Image 1: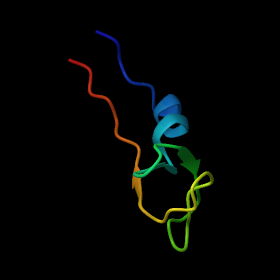
Image 2 (image 1 turned 120 degrees about the vertical axis):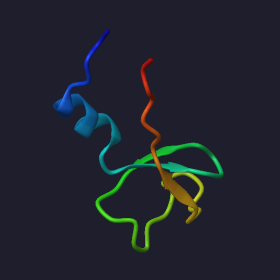
Image 3 (image 1 turned 30 degrees about the vertical axis):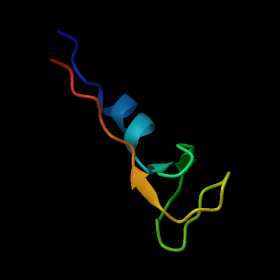
Length: 53
């Protein structure tokens, strides 16, 4: 069983948002007034953490 590393989780999932229109990754400090870097859409979501079984 592989364990999760806090440093790696923070780098991969913290402040990373995914555009719901074009699936581009955006690294942002805050979501307030944020837009996608590719398509300028405002519909963003947090990156999902993959659960290991």
